[in-house]
Length: 447
Image (cartoon, rainbow, N blue to C red):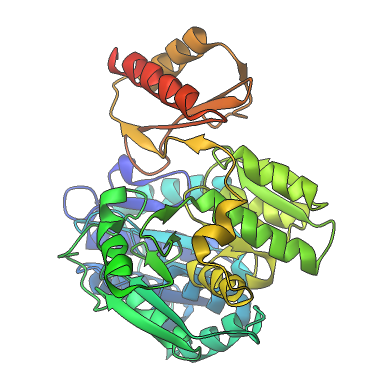
């Protein structure tokens, strides 16, 4: 079974049981094998309760179409991207990222960790639906299944990408939220002079402590409290599949992801002056200002990892940052990795005697609302109503609406993964930000 709502703009996600099941996973594996003209395919999975079943079913389908599967087993999503880049193979990751425990999904990449296209995802959805509702062809051949542990090689590669020669002793809280950060972070950080205070590092796909979505401030509260309690230098909070990372300063306050993006961009521009940096439509205006002041060039992408990766590749960008805390690195095969972003922050913190709050203070220039989600029945009508009421220039580029005014912007866009409208507001003046935020929310409630 494959319900239409599981096919998203960037990947596949849905509730296992009501929206897709083992038969649907098998159909997706068959369809992928038909569409990918490559003899070997990497497959990994996260720790969700249903992931072993989906993982084994997809592998069976691939093998039934004669594909050799390189099974890397339990892996963070960025570990899968690494394996695809290192081995120059296409890959499938079984994960539903930050979604609640009843969800699961699939993420894909082309050989060398390059992004799949929207056309590929459309064709995959169409062919998988045909196979799910029609006669499934008999197996044509039996491909091999190779087991490969890439965690050590992944760790060594990450550590080679950041100058950690000036590391000083640091105390760091790591909250994996029972997700895949508990698999990768202890291994990577064990090579550094870092005292790790671990929160929820054990892998548990039921997420007994908090949901694996650090975009929601309540899911970062435990890390904030632990930083204050232990006098830590930094807090690191991963989402469920560990391709995103949020940071907490020594005061126990969340660091805006755009500030982290600006800081990493400056580091990368120091290494390669004049390079291109990719941001998305809801990244703070401060990032563009700071990058241009540092001599770099900024290009804007739609929100979503497939769009960001494609633009990174076409522009030859050295780095990309999204306000959702996805960070992309050309040297990491153009893919997003929360662990590498964390290493950059640790390196920056070690290179100075400042607390992290002061280190990032210069990268925060605007007041921001954070992302506010609303359920609406007619997203298009709601966005039009807001556009008419606020005026401003729409620079959204087809990614919802982004209204640009005098020292402010308002973004209202449909989620790529959930039935929501996402609101982000930024303004130079905090009072203007609050006024715009409340005005838009009142307009959204009229739906």
